[in-house]
Amino acid sequence: MKHSIEQCRIVELPKISDSRGNLTFIEANRHVPFPIERVYYIYDVPGGSERGGHAHRGLNQLIVAMSGSFDVILDDGANKKRIHLNRSYIGLYVCPMIWRELDNFSSGSVCMVVASNLYDESDYYRNYEEFLIDSRSTP
Ligand code: T46
Image (cartoon, rainbow, N blue to C red; front, side):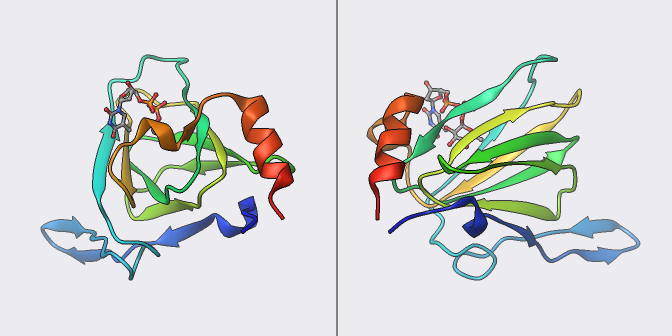
């Protein structure tokens, strides 16, 4: 199946607010369209650094700016878009076969990612040309 950046979308997560502060939760198959197998987070990113620069063959993910802000650039091989994340109750769902880059990290930002599978290096495209060939040849 052909994947496109149109399938990637902003997900507004529940926010329970009271006088003690806010609480947000993520439930598998409800707030994200996949079972949750892994959570990881990126932090202490030096100013000007970039992360990502790869695509995944089968991985689904939800990316959340738990603190601070950063940009995610999505690229399906035909179209690109840049999305700014800066709220801990807003997630960006990223489907498989999307080249992603993350930049513009604010000081102290934390990027939390909920993923559909365990870490598997063989799921990665780390070469953009290889990704382009495969994404353009998928019907
Ligand atoms: C994505 C962005 C937002 C692990 O051992 N386990 C893990 O779960 C992950 C994600 C990485 N690693 C190892 C693999 C590398 O040796 O940690 C090292 C850095 O991983 P990577 O270059 O993939 O990190 P980022 O920040 O460039 O990209 C990651 C995700 O891979 C990617 O899917 O969307 O965060």
